Image 1 (cartoon, helix red, strand yellow):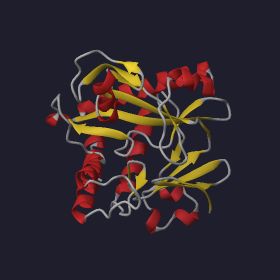
Image 2 (image 1 turned 45 degrees about the vertical axis):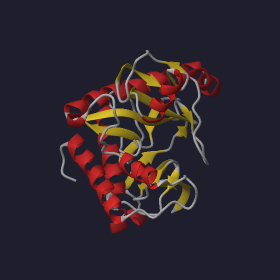
Image 3 (image 1 turned 135 degrees about the vertical axis):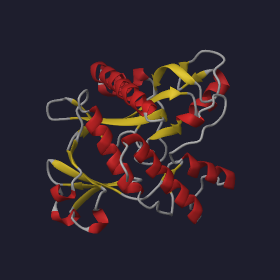
Image 4 (image 1 turned 135 degrees about the horizontal axis):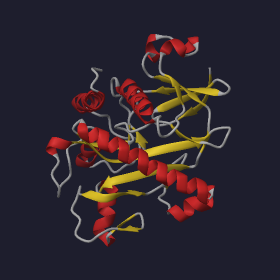
Length: 282
């Protein structure tokens, strides 16, 4: 098969007017691929994205065709690919990552402490760490092929892709986040923030693509443990990030080997998030 892309987690194969996305067990932190694999992670991400694509297709089209291995080219019908392949429509991908924040945490919290703003958006005074924002904020970034993504303003997205498409991108991102965050809350999970990617099809229609609301692209917090004014327990790879920080890793290469117990806990968190959100045993 013709491989046309290799991301931090996904490998992309070209079928002409379709693609096969293969989600690996690789894990990245601070824009760096770790040397250790996380068992079952790829299958969890694939199944979770498929779940959200099905749930949101009524109000935004997406690129998913099938996650059934029987629908894949025969090269992917082997045990190593089982459960981790997605057949998708080929799109013209937009050069943006659409980040929506419903709570103030992570880099947003660090920025707010300095000047009361997040990515240039001024927020009310007196917010506490992990506090819920009255209205979600949209903080897009560039999509870097190497190095770090850079935050840009909405006005800069207009310059990149035009006002109509930039506005549609912002409104759709906030809509998908709001609808799915409400659903997740009924399942006992807070989606603090997330990242979406979109493309356009041959008719110029905006289409949701890549992955959707996974522990790799989002912050998931258990609602029962949520306490304003502190960092939160999480179902996502924050556990790994915290281990790296506590170890004193300076984000230089090569990254450290990850202990088996940290890998095991990370794998379990991904599976727990999937089972909690979908109500389905992994």
